[in-house]
Length: 484
Image (cartoon, rainbow, N blue to C red):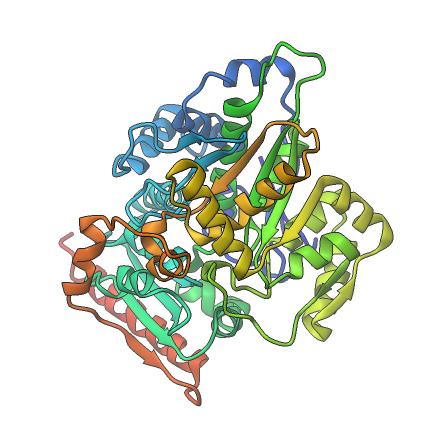
């Protein structure tokens, strides 16, 4: 299995190369050169598998046994999920009015990103130990990625992690989950800016190919292919849990509602579709609606500002995984993708070609959900089910309720729930509901915190480069002093 850049100007690489890369050297994102096609027989076989077993099957399709033998791969994934609070790792709650909520948040940080990042970290460690290498991971976060990335690598001897968080733009709990991990290999910066602004110095640093190579830099944002790979399993599991029967001809469709910011989960769903999974995708966004406008009208352009919303982890203006979707739906046309993305990077606005827009609106429908609708949805779900949604999950469930209220026939529907309500007490309070906060989250308040400020007016790129250089020197010093 080879991986190519969506912009077509970089050499193809194997899975190990894609795992250790952020952006490709030409500025694109890595995608599999070809997608495996799954027939009815395979889907039948997979339909009874647990979530971890599905992850193993999918990973084995995209990672050759010459890189990771199947037994080793199975062990890595078992280890990745060993700290999850539920044995089955993810859980489907079947609620009133046909509402199915797939809880993806039973990992250490109570968010769906634990699923992919735990696997990614195990895959990284496997290769690092084999190659006796050290890497520095750089992560920009809008809330949940940072803490999940930190938890997945904290204390690991051959990995340092640098996290940039947007000060005042994530919830207090999200921030504390990052700043209270006082491990030697964890370095957290609080940036006076939003999540799009903090992405800029990261992108600048990764654009310096020689610097990236010299210091073994990589990203764990969902620009990393391995993150998207694990997320494909969400869609397969949702389908198998909600499809009425796999004995029907053709296979029955299931609608999967995907709340998203950077579109990683959406890209995973589009890949699952292309592999032969009969799902309809509905993407649900908050008031930061660039993905919604792109699907509805082909208008891929930035708004003037990022609007702060109750679903703060989705307060994103630049959904970078849309590039993967454009490439996929244009028939792997890297020329079209490159032209689109270069225009977008230059002017912050691009109109999709008619053919690509038509493919996109056929594969995905979309809705934008206001804060008011989020609060109403959280209230209604509690009233009908005594079930508490986080604001991001409420963005998805709001789409379900709109369909139910229209009383139109539709296929079974599954709403992906990316986080626990326990992480968003402010939103729960705004919905006038009561939260039973887990003890481990309450304990964060009393822990010592460590965070280096990146203030407006500081040279953020220089600060980031200096930190990376310092960590490289430290590692080289430690490496030279290791016993022979």
